[in-house]
Amino acid sequence: MSEPIFSSQDNPSQDNAYPPNESGDEVNVGRSAASRSKRSRDEARHEAEMREARGQYEELAELAGSLAHEIKNPLSIIHMNIDLLSEDLMEIDSPSSRRCQNRVDMVRNQCERMEGLLRDFLRFARLRHIDLVPGSLNDQIQQVLDAYQAQADSQDVELQRYLDPDLPSIRLHSDALQSALMNLVKNALEAMPDGGQLWARTYSTRGGVNLDLIDTGTGVDDNTVLHMFEPFYSTKDGGSGLGLPTARKIIEAHGARISVQSETGRGTKFSLQFPVPARLG
Image (tube, rainbow, N blue to C red):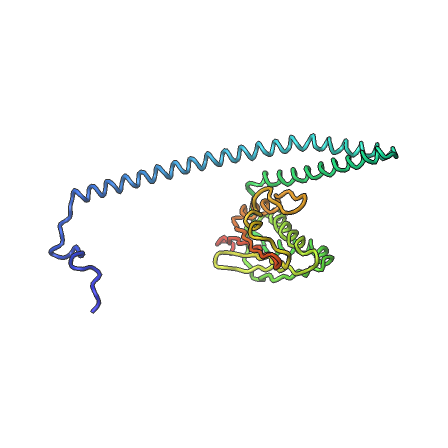
């Protein structure tokens, strides 16, 4: 015979059970009410702190965007005048003018680098909220792969497409999502300068719709995986370090998640997980 759930000492229905301690019950109720009140105050304080932090972040982002614009304007003037100075120097054929030309070219290259950095930063800073409409993830990745087909062919990279024809629709912003996907495909191709394969696979899961991008490129180490989505972190010469952070920001604005796995010498896998609203199915 199985043991009862309550022993004779624990079961309050037994005759020898102690009578309820009314004063103890009142104390417990009072403590419970005080605990709930404290929890409510803590939650309210936390929400207020979060609102203040978001406000400060938005103010800082707006200030940073304004500062970037202020830098961009004089930088454009510097770039224009460097081009004019270069034209003047080309009319003078002398050793000193050639030395000056080399220095002018160096300044021009740095101007172009700074302009590219500012463009990437402004794109990153402006991205907050985007309007989403029903669409096909398959169509988005198809268009991106088609855009890079010629480059892939020139690098001897084989593009493999395994796209689920029964994939449910998701809510998306076509231009923004394609920009993010282009960044991921571009990175994959840059990791395979001597050829390789890039697989694009879409499939449904219980939680939504997934896209995997898997390349056979050089891969990256664990430290790079840890920091690759941080703004201004880059392992490329002249890179702004804003490509992947912007891509992540776009993907998260879709209510989606992005994760990465990589192994040096074997390749990299980016996985995107998109939610599927019930009404879209």
